[in-house]
Length: 80
Image (cartoon, rainbow, N blue to C red):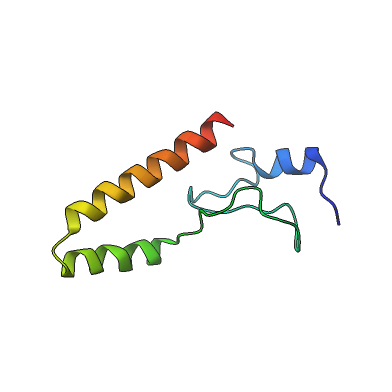
């Protein structure tokens, strides 16, 4: 199934079908390429990274990197 521009617009409209988690990738349908790629990081994956950074004594580096990544993602998605 090929998605139409109207379907994609509906899928990415806030308060309709747009994913709530800002670090979600998006593909219009199964077996089609991702239109928003490289974002898939679940809260659990971020938690593991935080615990690893804490264990290694680098929590400030993790917080800084995670903040920049989230900010860039939100900024990019709000400008499109």
